[in-house]
Length: 420
Image 1 (tube, rainbow, N blue to C red):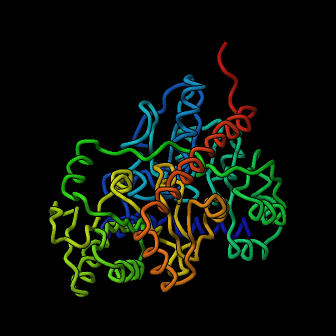
Image 2 (cartoon, one colour; image 1 turned 135 degrees about the horizontal axis):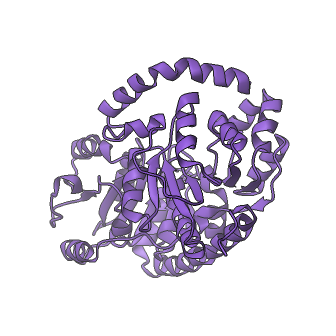
């Protein structure tokens, strides 16, 4: 299967520039930097040892940030390169990476792109997060002497089913890793069933500092909101905005200000149109529309501002959990800010985090829209309840900081030797 994969990617390689240009026109690639996706570096490589860290999308790259900072603090002699695959994640990393840490878009897993990328950067160690398994790039890196680590490894049931059809390829690919730390017990059992050797369990998303924000902008928005309570629908997907709007419309007066933060801000116009059709008054942050007393929904259709939006909230409904199509998003980000959390039934991506938060009395899971409406109504009518949940959420969120210490301990044997 790996051989067939290499042949297929080689055959597709001539089409890669055409595909990337089309994606750039659709806003899915950075038109100024899509050559990086073909393995052409846009930055020079400094001398010395280099560590390459990769997270595919927003959640994975954000989970890498505390580890990047810890590696930089412990080993300032090393050059750190972080790659990601989406425009949104690149924008966030551009603002939040420590000084001196490089960012590049991840190369496509075609033979020439992989050779160019690895030939330029020559990483001593590659650290991948969750489920990014690129056969061509990984096997070429291994052949070049790069050590490989997979942290917070997670395989969906669908991925396991696919790899089970090619067991020898699965064993070869997983066997290339010098270190695998699974995200949870279920992921560990799935990886081991495919022949991977798992050294332990680690969830990088349980670690991390609170999301950053603009203090002056927070003060301005708080003044605009005034005494109104605020319910935030965070990282919502199609179908969820309407569900949350219906829930808020069912709460008793005075109703809270609803702030919706779509997972993909480019949905802003469509979300606003749908809410307006429902008869709700909407202001869009991307258009600099103000929050007035008449505004019922503030649409935070911008990038990288959840840290700001969460700090306005009294209660958070986590998106990605209401329609059964996504698997949920990271609840620890609002938890670290001391916010009570309500989620729908679909939390497969963060099963362990939600289990811990729910057990601690910091989050509530609603199985359907009727239950969601009831839970939100109860929390808004009894201010003492969300306040208690928020304190428990903060304590739980802060307890995960040991994950970075565990990650560093596991990675130290794979790091290049420090200079004398």
